[in-house]
Image (cartoon, rainbow, N blue to C red; front, top):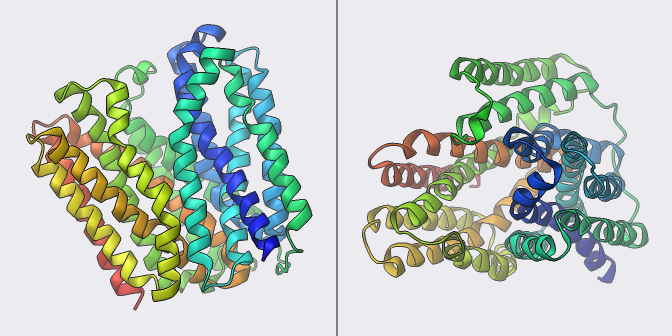
Length: 444
């Protein structure tokens, strides 16, 4: 149906806007720093302000989509993202830019879970994996294109131009939603403000502490003791416990008891945690291996990831369509096992040729992730009632982001060891295999 395709296009545009912004900005940071006269710590917070706002609020964004309507929250998120991007482009100082980036992160916390939830609400379950495959493919391709587009814009027009990408995309997505998105049949419910505050604080402190563990020496310009990081991390974990206790006692929980008792939903999120932790370990360790030991240039190292990106971009829709026909369970087992084999191949092929030891396993990894990404997301959305899809998307997004930060922290811990590359990749393979086992047990 045409209206479904238009809604899917709006969701793809909205989420791609957030993905391309993050990847395009990285290449603009040196010029941005020189233009604003910012120190390294301020530049770090240009990235961290966005990341922490997104990680701490994405679950709330999903809950708001369930409470006030998925298309409505997505439209608000798009317009707010476009407006905050304009504020970034016009920033006269580093402090202004950091504040605008925080608003961008808040906007992305509305856009990311509500776009996936709207896809879930728009497509029936037997077509959902294919639709999410389109979303995943677009996300992979826009993320890959970000550095290229960002580099050209920065070189041609200056760093401000990176942020001018977003306003027209935001307007296009909001316009498509206004024209084609049907009225949301959401269940009216009282929003849990106290629970939202608790979970935002818990996820924010946990994300910050994990991000500090993975700092490089240059990024550690602000001297923060390990003890302080540990205390903040413990407060984040404690906050999650407090959130669970609060949700059990309040009369209008943000996370309904039916979701807490949903074994399939819990298992799929555990699989997400294991899979994305393993993936982030590899993403952290491999560039150091390629540049420091194999002496590749940064551009050459970036090209090594091309098979991974192309496989995700070109094959996600195909494997999503297959999952719609045969079910997700086989894909959720085969994909992580293939990734575990790729990580093991990378570890054992450390001293092999570049083609056999790196390009081969990265190609296998790209195929494996294309097999699992769309079916896993679709399975998470299908494991809950329609009225809970926004919250389910928010929880799954928050899980993936915490997994990414946790994986970097683990990789930073083993990376300094003599055999750190191999140890880290074997650990990543074990985590991937654990994800496959969890999916096998929880999707029967």
